[in-house]
Every structure is written in structure tokens, then in C-alpha cells.
Image (cartoon, rainbow, N blue to C red):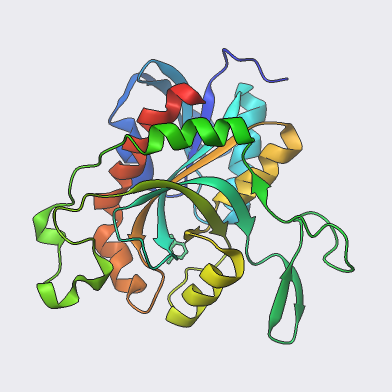
Length: 265
Ligand code: ADE
């Protein structure tokens, strides 16, 4: 049973994502953990240990396990950016995961991948419960907070000319913060066909490269895992251009949402 007074571990894949959180931390000290700089301190009065893991499922899973064991953390959080899968979402919207899936783990037969529970042999018909879901009461509490969160508009100089606005939320409508399913896999998605397939097959809102791997670690260690992702791109044919353009501008959105929900964790 985790100690309820222990720190929360926060895992960020990239420096921009960690920087957005560090700005709001107090009582900071740093430690080295197998070559990773871990930042200890408080986020709005809550003890946290924050690490930049590097990108991908292995990097984030190793970091999560090390943080949990080294600091006796009471829960695992992943904070950062993602590609949007749901065509109703726009760059700058934020998804809090009620469900996490490793979309690249499973049984590949011809063109079809049948997803399986990560960690079990991907053969046969058992262990098809492949999603890591938040406990219902936590998901409901987060959903109640999420609808109240208002994020500031993205800077004007990042907005595209009017002809290109399909990806971006029309001005004045505000950025959404919602609960959804987030997928993780060891690929950056830059394809409209793959975006559509992932959205349809998994009924998912966003895709990134770490969250569901940390969820697997959380399931092994008996720790809750909360993933907060602000959309830097829409995972389609423009995502390789949008990601570098928006990553630093949207990473603070995930940090803002985490600061609003942290008292529920
Ligand atoms: N993280 C941010 N954008 C992404 C994308 N398009 N695919 C995977 N991970 C991402």
C-alpha cells in the first residue's frame, strides 16, 4: 500500500514538458538517478519528484519504476504533449486519460494487429483486456474538475492563416479539457490513414509514446497512473510540422491542468 504522504512521481518525456512544470515548483533540489536529473520539490504544496525520461515506452517505463522504488512514490503521473486522434479535437485541447492502451502491442497477422494485455503472450484468445483503466471514482472526480478548467488562448503568432484553420479551434471557442482514451506506441504518428484507424479501432482521443507503458508499471506496483496530454498536433499528414511548432506552446497547458487536478490524486 503506498504511503499517502509520499511524493507523486511525474514523468515527462522531453525537456519542454518538464520545464513547463518546473516553473511552478518550489523548494527545488536535484538528484541524479542513473544518469537522469530528478527534480524534487513542491507543486502547489504537493510533494513531487519530476524526471525527464526520454521518449518512448521503454525509457518511460524504466524511469517510472526507478522513481517509484527510489522515492517510494504514491502514484505516477505523465505530463506533456500528444497528437490528437479525435477529429472533434484541436491543437491546444487537453486530454486526461481515463483509459490507456499500448496500440502497438499484440498479435500481428497480415495487416491486422490484434491488441493484447502487455506482458502476456500475444496468442490465443485470453487476456484481451488490453486497456489500463483508471478506477471509476478517480475518473469521475477528475471529470468533474476537468470541465471547470479554462486554458488561455494559444499565442496569436502561432495561429495559421484563416485558410488553414481546420486543425485549430476557431478563435473565441476556448480550449477543451476532457477525459478520454490515450494510446501509446513507439512511433510518432504522421499519417491521416493511421490517425483514422487508431481513432476508429480504439475509440481513442489522443496518441503519444509513453503513458500506457507507465500504466503497465503502475499496474505491477499497485500505483495509480494519471496521464495528462495537451495536443501539439493532430497525428495526420501535418503532424511533423505542427509538433515542433506547437510543442513548447502547448506543454504549459498540460502543466496547468495537472496543477488543477493534483489535489484529487
Ligand atoms: N506526441 C505528440 N504528437 C505525437 C504523434 N503525432 N504521435 C506520437 N506521439 C506524439
